[in-house]
Length: 231
Image (cartoon, rainbow, N blue to C red):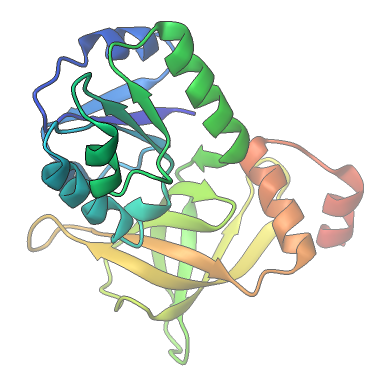
């Protein structure tokens, strides 16, 4: 785990939580969910300070859950002391991972450790090939983040959301060449002339692809598998 978004639309002081984590992970702070979603960064986990008003909390959760990219990122919601059980139900918190403020360092670390066991991601900048389905042209871009299910990358070319593409890249460690189908689920550009930032979900992966991708993400090497692939 390398990067966490601290989102505080409520005005609650998250400095204690940041101090718990600053020695082991990069923490980026935002004043609203929308501000965080406009960022060009890709977090491993989102920490959201809940607004005491259930309507505002419900809105913030809807923004996150309704986004095809940020909706897949694990999150923990920090609840203010005064919010009631009825308010949590009204905000749609039934299936959310939550901690009630004030919170001890051990609680935060334990919750994040549990998330890290479930979510395998890797921040990695690599040259990648991107070829839209049915298009003879192949574009080149730079990867930003890999997960078991997808990739975040930058590219100069404009590719439509929901377009099927083929992503290709080579593992620098093992020289294994990956050629994976993916669907573009998010496209963003901060201003005219800027690089496009994309999020894509892998499709139709074989069991071998999944094993090799997991090895790439975790830094493992399976000598027999790699040798067979490169033969």
